[in-house]
Structures are given as C-alpha cells and as structure tokens.
Length: 156
Image (cartoon, rainbow, N blue to C red; front, top):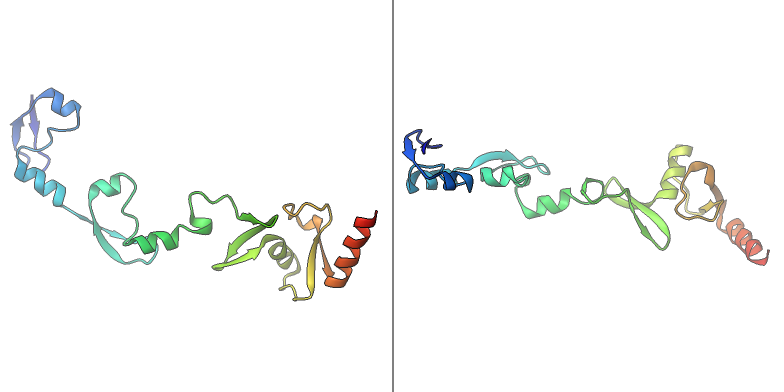
C-alpha cells in the first residue's frame, strides 16, 4: 500500500497491518526521529511562561503546565478536576477563597451581611445540620448566647 510520509511528503510502500496498528506514517527512521523530536511551544496555564513540549503530550491532554509545581499549584481547590465544592472537617464544610481555607457557613453570612464576622460572633445552624449552609438556616450569636442555647437544647 502506498502512503505519503508525514514529514517529508515522499511516497513510500507500507503494509496495511502497520497502518491499522497506528504505524506506517514515516518513510524512514530519520523522518520518524524528526517527528518524535519536534516540539511545540505552549503557554503555562498557571504562570503564563512559554515552554516546549511534545505534540503527543498535548494530544493526550497533557502539556498544559511548564512544571510539576505549576500543575500542583493550579489544580488545587476549585481548579481541581475532583473538586466537589469544598471538603468536610469536624462536620463543617470548608471552602477556599482567595487562597485561604474558610468555613463555608461563615463565608455565606459574611456575603449576606456585606461585612466580615467579628471574632466574638458565632454562626449557629438552626436545624442542627452543620452542612446546611443556606442563609435562612444560619443565625449570628455571641459565644455566650450560643453556649446557653445548646445547654437548653441538651436539657430538653
């Protein structure tokens, strides 16, 4: 079977089984070496630096970052393909905002109020579900009032 070389354009003879198996693209080992050693220029998705990588890496969906460090820094938190909107620790949902980890229920009330919560302000979940962070389920209290409320709830 006649085929055209992907590097030099020369016609060459190859077997159909080679083409079927993804081979038979180059007329010689020299053309194959050129193909495998040709790099493309990309821009790092994290830092914006130009770098060179192989087309085969780009084809596989790789070659997006100039280094492992940039890849690790970019794909954390909300940028991670595994991100589900936060993580749970001690029963509370945590999120990342501006590179900092914060409790989601505090963030939600800060957005509703339009200000940062003070240190002495506690966010109470009215239904007792620490993962239900809807504004209607959240109430601001002082440490003292919150302790009294939970003390009364335990007695009831």
